[in-house]
Image 1 (cartoon, rainbow, N blue to C red):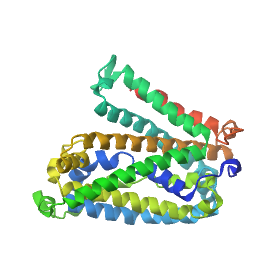
Image 2 (cartoon, rainbow, N blue to C red):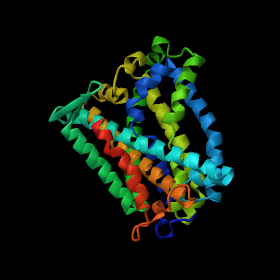
Image 3 (cartoon, rainbow, N blue to C red):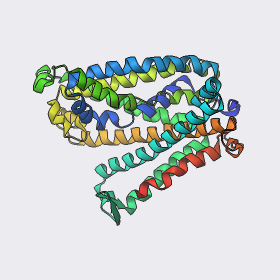
Length: 356
């Protein structure tokens, strides 16, 4: 196993951005209502997020130990092969490749749903057929394939370009979230927060939400895959980048949900697609705010696609380096130093997704 010496260019902020880009995505805007409903109230939600941190921390600390010892391409493939041999590396590697590739496809679909909200004509023009009550249209298929192709090209160009896109997405998300949180907490109404039993505590509700959060908060482990592409100084601090991602994103998600519950009765927020944006529209009186936050969520979706395709390709490369798949996959691009065949393979999963 080796580094990619010709392209070790990801900074500490780049590592943080890759992790946040995979974690924040669209959940902060689109899942708030689902989380409040599952938890059964905003107080239960806060407890669930606190428990999520407690559960995730031991895993994060394990990564902090593993990354500086084995800052190599493949992340978990390397750690599992070192600890459990080739069978462990094989199982973990393929699980990681498939998980990230499937999320890449799913977020490509989520991104086009956001674009349909912004440009309704995309979902109504040139109707092809319907699956499960959902329309498949030619513009949607074309846009999804173009979007996936653009992410593929960025991956092809190298880790520094991936990190640059992650930085843009992360800064955009954080700026918009912080601005929205500032406005929401200025108008936070404790009476609204406590309405409909908002302060009633039920551990079963917190545990129900916790079962979702351990997946929603996932993505910080992307830092482990990016460590091989990091500069020497950044690689040594990669474990701390991972911890920053975990605490920052979990706190942001909890704060957004809390802000919504302090401006809208939480049961009313349940039925809304983007309750955080709706609350800000009520506060500002500017309907365009909702569109602005939908655009921000689309940027978040692009960030997730970037990070998940990066992770899938690097894990595939790790499998090749341990001879757990054909060595045909371990070829690097002579100019960009990227595992091009791994990127081609993992990106190919999205070819069928737009048609479903």
